[in-house]
Image (cartoon, rainbow over all chains, first blue to last red; front, side, top):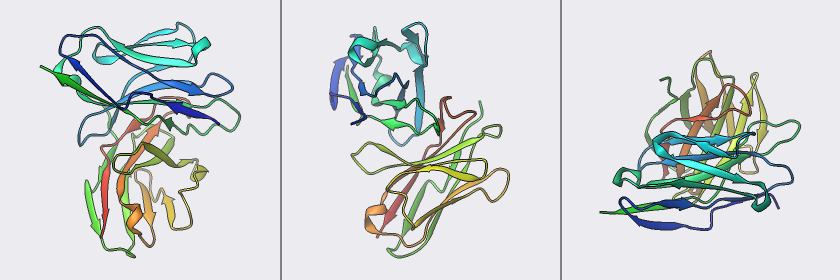
Length: 116
Length: 113
């Protein structure tokens, strides 16, 4: 079945430490891939996207993500986490295909807690 | 930077009542969406709207739900007879093209009593 999986429901890292949030997808063709962040009481903000080309994409707030076709993964990384990065992170895809309406399929989300 | 705006931010309604959630998408966007997020769960797609008609809807989007773009700026979601399980955060989103990133509003928290 087509799906987006974020294996880690909750992650805690220390401020200044590196971060990697995992995302795997299960679709026949590589979909369009996105990472969104949701701070408490806020909407979803786009961090970065991958459509094609260079498999390492840069986003806002110092985030990057790497697309690995062989692993069907699109993991989000940040070299040094700041306390303000504490939020919920969602991986999402728009499946390729005819009649594509742009429907976003979201993973369950990963809650990031940052320790001082 | 242009934003998607949603009103109200919080709506409390008695079960069985009708509710209308309002959204103003970004002005040059052509594709419009509603999603919902039940507390503690993931964000779920409800409906997409393009060229003044629904282009896709999920199983959640049953006959109790409808969407409308009554003028050139607003995009509304109506729930005709609300149920307790409709309690959720509802997000509106818009994009220039179907494969372009969607911009989200801050959501409307709907509480059904």
